[in-house]
Image: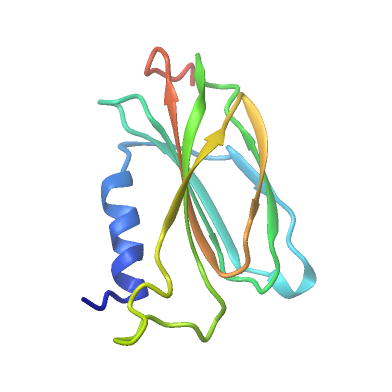
Length: 136
């Protein structure tokens, strides 16, 4: 079955919804070519307590993001990082339907950490909290 890149984007966004938004959690610096090419936000799912970071990098170069979760009571170090990335012209075809698919790896989080968002990527980092609550 051929699944488009748009399918995988929706597949990443749908289960990673939160109901509480936290501005200013992710900071970053863009290259001159990357103006308006990066977006990041942080939400929390109040049922699970999970902190969900979504980073979209539409630039041709990686972007280093700084994440500050110090406003949360407790952050579990074991997190999951799912990345969907490719070059601009790549696509899933009938001959190669798995050319571009999300990859999930274990990720070490903390109260503060940096993350290099690959060029042309969507990243979802899901961090568990011990108490499930924010101090904010």
